[in-house]
Figure 1 (cartoon, rainbow, N blue to C red):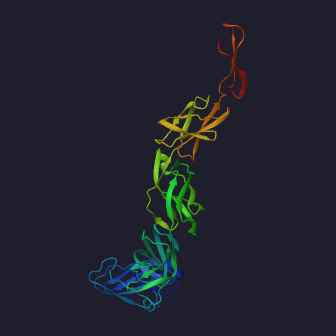
Figure 2: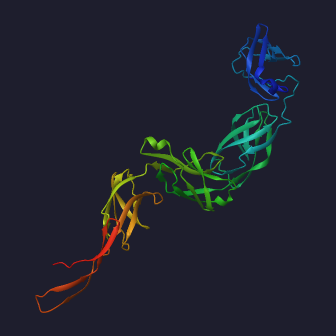
Figure 3: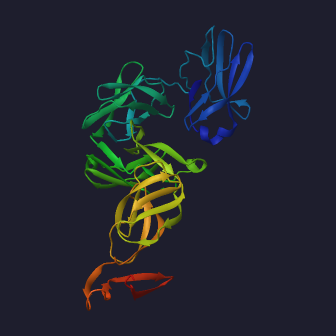
Length: 400
């Protein structure tokens, strides 16, 4: 490519082309990039010799432009390996006026990958490296507009401020006027790491240094993310995002991590598993006492040791028998009807129905009337019998 500097290119950008004139003829190429003061043209193949370069408007050579001559090497390949920047108006390409007007991000954590983008003014050559403190980072890409991008991964930056800049082809370093802030955030455990595909699972993340971070933190679920809520310096909470990829399968596991928006990649050993919510068909028995073995039937029960049953507000352990059945023991509660639900992460619950607690039968007193072989009268406690939506209290007749 050949870059040509001028003025007011935006006014006629739709009709601009580059014309290369050689002894053996001329070739016109389209302008690949147009800016107000700069155009970029693709250099065609030519035999050895001199070529005049013109910016052409409406199929005529711009009379105000200067003819610039480009020496074509004998082994010219595309793109040409030794092209320089040419200008219609005489222009001295030097590094004296190069400066950095800003960069992003301005703050990062010390253990993640991030893409450093520097806004470099008056840059008309590809820089050699980016610099972060004393570390040189390879340039990932640069644009003729003056943006330079470098991807840096886990440089083990400590809690400090680092100067950033670009290293030009001649070895000179151009530093930014401000420094990069590095915060020592550490992430620990997280849970629960399983939830339904609809999202909304409330996840707690432990660690330290969260209060020091001035920007927003995000919980990433694969490529999706939600804004994290910083509870205190050692605690973060966030909700899982919905998963549309797991619609065609029973479950889906994706990487999970917490990071700033500036992070492009982070090392993590944690993962989050999406699954379809369980479907409940029946609960048996529907009434009884504390200690009753209750069977809940349905579908979609995961292979997990984390299942629990909730009777009212009291939790009890559950055992997964199969994909269609789990069992749990009803805890001791006061006589009443309580809602029953199940969970595999103690956060998301699926309603299973209700369970009616009876008054426990007990012998209050027993006494004899008369001589031996006479009737023994036994007074019992009360029982509550369910009759549809009505309940009635009745005396329990003594056994014969």
